[in-house]
Image 1 (cartoon, rainbow, N blue to C red):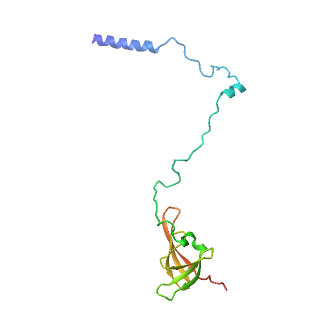
Image 2 (cartoon, one colour):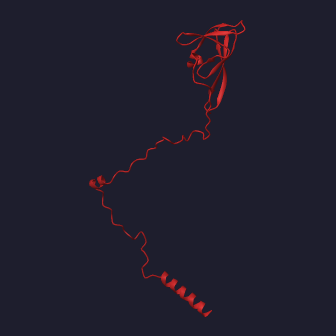
Image 3 (cartoon, helix red, strand yellow):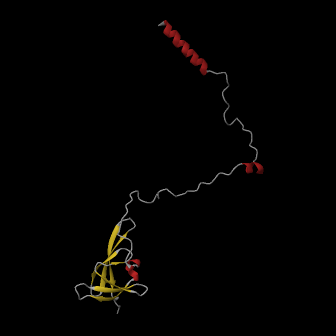
Length: 166
């Protein structure tokens, strides 16, 4: 036990003497004065390379405002029929034959060329299909992709003649 006490006292003594040093404590920051920096000259400014500005490059990066869930909706084959090149508002119903088993309608494009359509015909840019041909209108069902990337359908009436007010 005597040997253990001597070893402990020796270790404590070494720690105490190493903690004490003969250097004076450092002066507070306010008392230390740094030498004034010389004003940069034109030549010194020319030697320093200017820092390059950061420019954002979005190539190869995802759009932060798009949904992380990406679904591709296939609406059908590419445009093949001539009437699929035009919007429904550009087409005009000119004539209707409706008292038969298979009613038909004559539709005119903006160039004045006429096309005969029947139920099931493809029409319009939004993959429209003729649902029904009535005595004074053609009913078309269009499928389009809305702003939420969802396929939405709507029925559009193409009238043979517009109602005259009065």
